[in-house]
Length: 432
Picture 1 (spheres, rainbow, N blue to C red):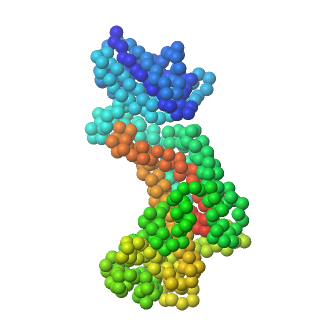
Picture 2: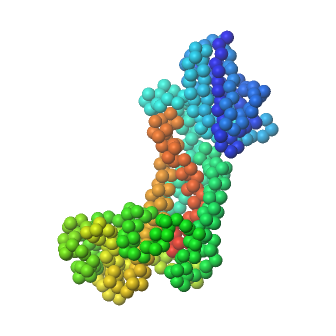
C-alpha cells in the first residue's frame, strides 16, 4: 500500500468553517484514488483557520498529482465553507500545492489544479480548463443596467452575487461601523441639525471635533487663491488640470483682464507659449440638466473654465473664471477675476469646485474607476482560468469591485438613491 498525506486548510474568515461531509479524490498522471471521506473524529473538524490532514492509501502509485477533487455533502443542512488550499505529500516525499481560495456552498464537486502558471497553449488539461470557464460563464453573466452605462454583472443585490465575490460578513459590518464612527468622530451629526448655512463660520460648527494640523490648516486657508490652485494638483480630482497652449474659443478672457496677475512681465500669449498657463475645462458639464427631483427647489449647474497661472514662486493661482460658455462677455457671461469683489471671486471659485465635485464623483470616480473596472473583472472571470498568470495578477486588484458596484447600483445611483437626493447632477449624467 502507498500513502498520500493530504492537508486541507480552512480560511480564517467569519463563518469559514463547515459541519458538512468533505470527500477527497486524488487524480494523478497514472490513475486516481478512491473517493475518501475525511474522518469525522478529527479534532476541530474544518474549524476556522484549521489544517486537517488525512491519509489516502492506494494499492498503486498514482503518478504526479495533477488534480484534487473536493466533494461537499450536507448532513442536516448546507453551509458555506471557505477552503483556502490543499497540499498533497506523495509516498516519495514530493509535495504538490493546490490553491482554492473560494467559498463552497452547495453539494457540488470542485476540481482544483496545482498552483503552477499555465497559458492555454501550454496546458495539457484543456478539458478541465474549459469546464472551469463554462462554469464561471454561467455565474458571471453580462447585463446592461441602464442604457448608456458600461456592462455590469447580472445581479441586483449582494445576495445574488457568486459567493466568492460577495462582501464577507466581517467586511460588511466594518463598512457600517466605520461609517457610523466617521460620522461621530467628524462631528457630522451637527451637520444634520443645520437646516441651512447663514455664514461661512457655520462650516466650523460641522468640523468642531476635528483636531489635527491638516484640517485646521485647510479651515484657515481654504479661501486663499494659492490653496485653491494647490488642490487642483493635490486634491481628489487632479485629472482635470492640463497645460493650456491655446485658449478655448468659448473662453472670453483677454490680455487686459489678466495682466495684473502675471508677475513675469510677459503677455498672456507669451506665458501660454512658455508653458506657465494651465486650465480646468468642465466642458463635459455643458448641457447637463440639473436634478429636478424636488419640485420646490430650483437647482443649477455650471460648465466653467478656470484659468490657472504658475507664477515665479511656483504657485498655481486662479487668474480667470468663466461660468458660462459664450464667446463674448456680456449679460449672463462674466469673466470673474481676482481683482473683483471678494465675494464675487469667492463664489466663482465655489462654482468651479462644485463642477469639479460633480465630475469627480460621477465621471472620474464612479465611471472611470468603479464601473470600467467591473467590465475587466467580469471579463477576467469569464475568460481566464485560475492557472492563467494574468488571472493571478489581477485577482487581488478586483477584490470586492463587483460587490461594491452592485451595492452602488442598489442604493447609491438608483432612482431615489443617495446621489439623486444629495447631488445637483445625478447618475444619468454619465451617459450624456
